[in-house]
Image 1 (cartoon, one colour):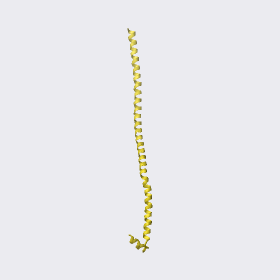
Image 2 (cartoon, one colour):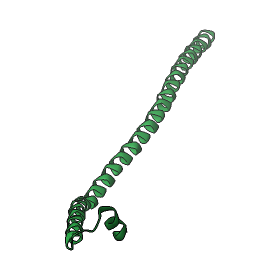
Image 3 (cartoon, rainbow, N blue to C red):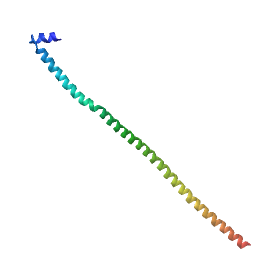
Image 4 (cartoon, helix red, strand yellow):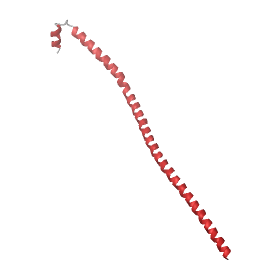
Length: 112
C-alpha cells in the first residue's frame, strides 16, 4: 500500500513518510486519549444506570403492590357493606322476635 501511495503522488522525499506517520500516530494517540477519558467514566456511568434501573424496578414493584392493595381494599369494602346489611337484617329480625315474645308473654299473662 505504501508503494501504491508513492506511485500516485510520485516519489516522496526521504523523511516525508516518516513525518506523515508521526502525524498519524499523534492523531491516533489524541483519539485514544479522548477514548481513555470517556472509558474512565464508563464504570461510574454503569453504576448510576444500574442504580436508576433499581429505582425504576422498585417503583414498578411498589405500583404492583399498590394495585393489589386497592383490589384488596375494594374487596374489604364490599364485605363490610354486606356485613352491615346482614347486621341490619339481624337487628330487624331480633326486634321482631322480641316483639313476638313480648306479645306471647302478654297473652299468657292475661290468660293465667
